[in-house]
Amino acid sequence: MLKKFVLFTLLLIPAGIVAQEVKIAYLNSADIITAMPEYTQMQDSLQKSQTAVAEELKIMEDEYGRKYSALMSESETLADPIKTRRLQEIQDIEQRAQNFQQESQQRLRQLQEALFAPIQQKVKTAIEAVGGENNFTYVLEAGTLLYINPQTGVDATGLVKKKLGIN
Image (cartoon, rainbow, N blue to C red):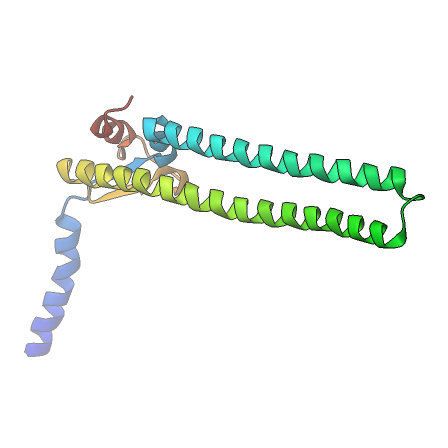
């Protein structure tokens, strides 16, 4: 008797789950993020940093070019110890430029992550608010879905943009 009751109860559980209304929404988070003013500010900040790095690398490149040209034009008249020292200076400039470029790329990645984190959090908070307000069971990223039925799915992109105060 107990086995029949447990079996009957287990069979009813899926029926109860199916009876609940499942509301699914989808959105395009890239569309939302790129419309945010914070994203534009982040892009501007990153561009300024990239420009500063490029200018510094250009200075190092110019210094390298001047010293290399001077060494080549005077190489036949210079004593070996002077040639060796100047060649070492050129190699040092080259190494500094490589190190600077690697460090700068790392710093730019860190800056991008630091500037992007609050944007992501703001979008996440807005998605959660829209999901709660509209009783969505799931809010999915449209770009990862293989098929979206526009008659049954809800595009929440506009709702989230509205929540964030953007068009």
